[in-house]
Image 1 (cartoon, rainbow, N blue to C red):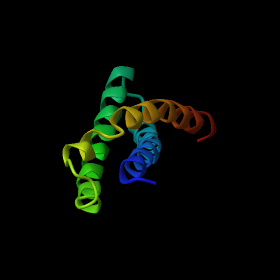
Image 2: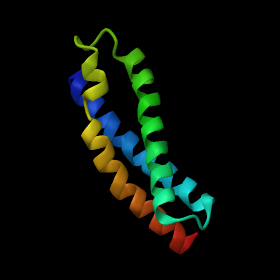
Image 3: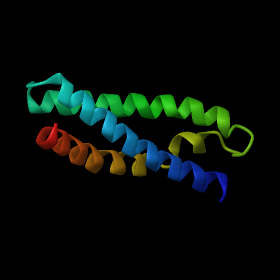
Length: 97
């Protein structure tokens, strides 16, 4: 696999992990309003993405020519994976937790 493809799939897996983390935080926040919970969880996902950028930048610094590709590769897939898995995990926690 090329480094770009690896980066894409790493971001997808990180989106799923961020969905699980966001769902756990939303459940622990308790009975706050719906929009506040969603904004807080989106902020967690965004912070998780930015932290992963610095880790991945150190890992792929010599392997990818344009360093801006490290930031932009997989960003849409990250958030498209985060949202349904956030909903899935949050629903499962609320029902079974």
